[in-house]
Image (cartoon, rainbow, N blue to C red; front, side):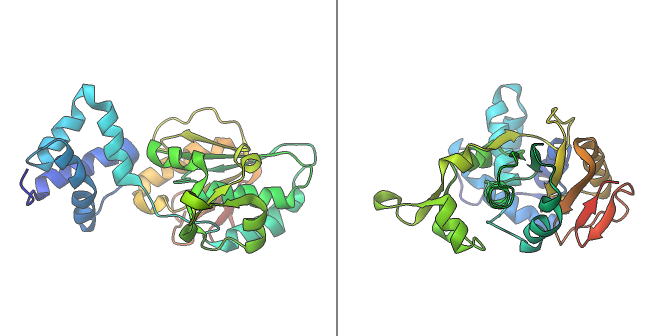
Length: 269
């Protein structure tokens, strides 16, 4: 296959339209080289001459598996433990002290990527809630990152903001062939479940949540898609529950039911 296969504007617009339909994601023209770079391996794999040929391949009914591969490659986000620490502080100081004893406290990480966010939440709950039962659900559109999340196995450089005390209590340090990695310990891992959810479609029945984290995903949506996604989530948020988005995102003009209580933190009346 020629090494100079380049993604032309017409081909790029096919991927743009498909990704918007499938996942609500808006790819700006600036993302053209990212798309070309991430999909190039797949062209080589199938010995295809052009991105247009690859697009045709994933659109055929028999290739649902490859369609998911393409989706995984184009939707994977960078993430790390305790990203945007103020959100975790807010949980510890303002939300968890009010958790009803005896009732299961539930959090949904709705764009969980490779699992760092749900496990950060699980550590926070395990520390704060004592005997109060709790549950964390992580979901993502990408099956690939969910498979990674379920293993709970990470490279040491992913630690980011993970406090030493939590690292010692909830993580096992790899030795020998696993040196340079760590594993979330099993009893914590068992309390976090991961499922594939496309926020752009009707949601599965997940029950109601005290807190929903929807971070670092809204930036990819246009205003109409944002409104639809938030409207889908709202019925799953308990009255008085919190929706937490990223500091770089906003619900301005997206939803007027939720009340802003702190930057990027909204509450359902």
